[in-house]
Image 1: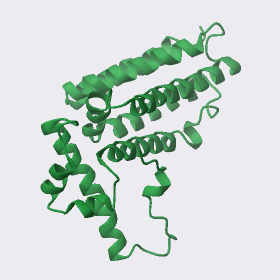
Image 2 (image 1 turned 30 degrees about the vertical axis):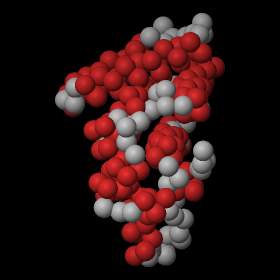
Image 3 (image 1 turned 90 degrees about the vertical axis):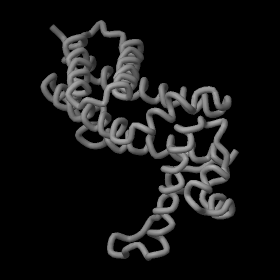
Length: 221
């Protein structure tokens, strides 16, 4: 199994130095391979899809595919790395766990994070479908990575709750560990409903209900 970090998939250049035509084409083809793999996985399922299917749909040779990915499993690793990086990036600065100092600031922070996560997870629903439908059970290592995403979500949420309890705007008796797990469960359910019903109004309504629970269910009376 080939392992890589998000940085391995990035072309790092100086702001004043634009990408060359070759670098742009390389990045574009990598994304085209991922997009085509999504199509094949959706049509045939992960296990029934071969490298030949992906390469054939895209009109490239096997050798070209292997210059970008070691195997089809490597594509899922890339998707997980990219998703994790986007989530972490959305939680910086004003959305960091220790940024809010009052309930009102926590409420505003929760709204911003909710909107950011909705955009990340619903902007391309194929990512959520791949991770929730196709990826579980492929192999033990991937299952462990998916559990790792859950653990990361639980730990991040617990950090926000612990901070609120410490500053006194959330309930002092709050079980932050299990509450964080409950929040992760709500978010997963929201993603599943978003895959079933793509109506933006329905998605926003569900997100608002989740955010209200995150405030009214944990705030200090």
